[in-house]
Image 1 (cartoon, one colour):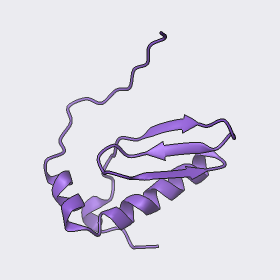
Image 2 (cartoon, one colour):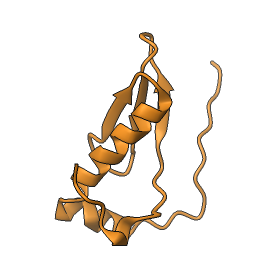
Image 3 (cartoon, helix red, strand yellow):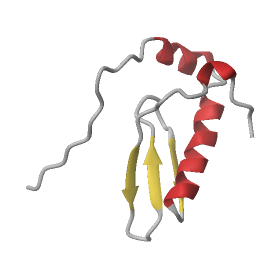
Image 4 (spheres, rainbow, N blue to C red):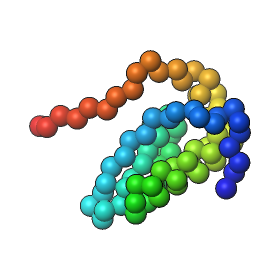
Length: 81
């Protein structure tokens, strides 16, 4: 597993979490294209997405995205159709 740079420690990242039909938790970080992971438990899925994000942050393009990411608020809403 890559070592997380001190620069990115304690950085809060937005995540979407869903439980699929097979009872796996699927996690997506919408900041980065193709940044998905899963786990049988929520803890496992979150551990896995941390590893994926660490790998993605090895790419310069991904680090550039974080330079401009300064949300004032982040929320998720759903509606019933």
